[in-house]
Amino acid sequence: MYPPIEPNCTGMLPVSHGNYIYWEECGNPQGRPVLVLHGGPGSGCNTGMRRLFDPDAYRIVLFDQRGCGRSIPHAANFETSLEFNTTQHLVEDIDALLNHLNIHSTVLWGGSWGCTLALAYALRNPDRILAMVLTGVTTTRQTEIDWLYKGVAPLFPEQWEAFRNCVPQEHRNGNLVETYAALLAHQDEAVRIAAASAWCTWESALISVHPDYRPSRQWQDPAFQMTFARIVTHYFRNGAWLAENELLNNAYRLNGIPGALIHGRLDLDAPLTTAWELSRVWKTAILHIVQGAGHAGTDPGLMEAVLAATDRFRR
Image (cartoon, rainbow, N blue to C red):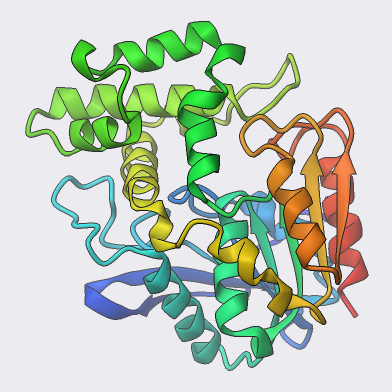
């Protein structure tokens, strides 16, 4: 990765319905713009994301999506409504941020959920996209959600049992996303805290295939757990407000935009099928399959592939 850098400037941008999104800009103010779309939804940006881009070549813009990271009002607060936190709102926020920074067109980088958001934005605004680098590719269709909260269970029986045991017995064979969403909206704070912890414990079990992998400390932070669990369940129970296969069915409209799809062969959080299917439709994107890697950016080979792609698009 490139050396650590600090932002040149930061800000809080007012967007719709009383939300303010945190943004920061690093690197070369005259460089090629690149907009970073973090995962989750609800994870927020981290300082390591600044280091994926050549700071001499790129004008690097990061922001925390609605309700998470340093954006406010924050989803960790039980009183914060998520009614106006949808994919369409995030797409509008991206437009607002680019306009605020006087950026007409940009490279997009997206990781995991950030891939879904990048695709949703690019399909609505193809004239603003110079290139795209997507890693841990997702489109948040129902088949992907079903895999996460049922299909992959046989590979992690002990973690799956703990995940199911956190919900009332009569709901353990039902829709766990809906059930957890209800628990996270429970009036009893102890119920909400237990549900958020169990949700994040299950999520972190799937991220890496490396035997020595340890989730970052934020996964143990109760505020992060609540934010992440609330926003993920909110998006997933609504199918991210996208029709099934909407992004894949329309990806042919991205042809002409250069792209890099970087995916671990052993990614259990987002199986390779989605990246493969996307590459069959978006023909100006190159699929790079990293052998022996899972979903975590720290898995062997993934970081090298991401850096090679961002270096390729820096001119």
